[in-house]
Image (cartoon, rainbow, N blue to C red; front, side, top):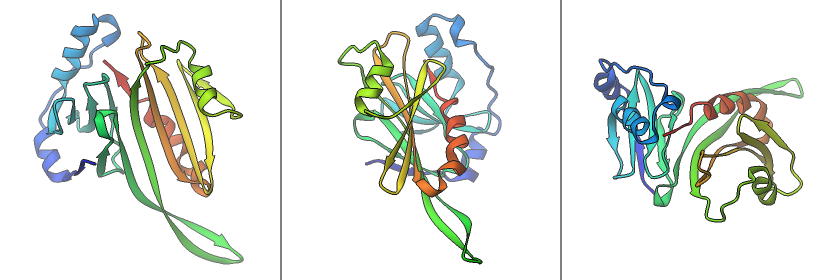
Length: 201
């Protein structure tokens, strides 16, 4: 599994003077929109022909050309790892929270993981909700925009998933948060904000 650790001072020097204009991709033909997105991003690290890390206006992005998506890398995550076959990425960082139990206070240390992936819609499913319910039978769906959230419990961990599809329904995209269930509410809003940074091109 490939891994890179960002050196913040180097990235700042590389991207500090880069100026990017906002582009309304919805008003452009697909190929032109893709080119404009790629031109607007300054490459920080090229992982392979399909994946690279970029910087735009001081923000870091993971860019996946194979499946045509990019997502912001939150500043609290310094390390990015990659799934095989260029299907996506995930990030981890250690966090802590002060816990008070039986009139005693202690720090609880734990790991937070967030990822974004894509797969080809080989089954040509057109009903995203049915696809998600088939993967998570018995769970409730939360609709947002053109996608759906579903909250999964895996022993002591809570996993929040967000699924959506591209316009041509050729790919299915998933973002996820994995965190100890006790700390789920502390990170839910931040993850939901992360899903809003995912852009297709």
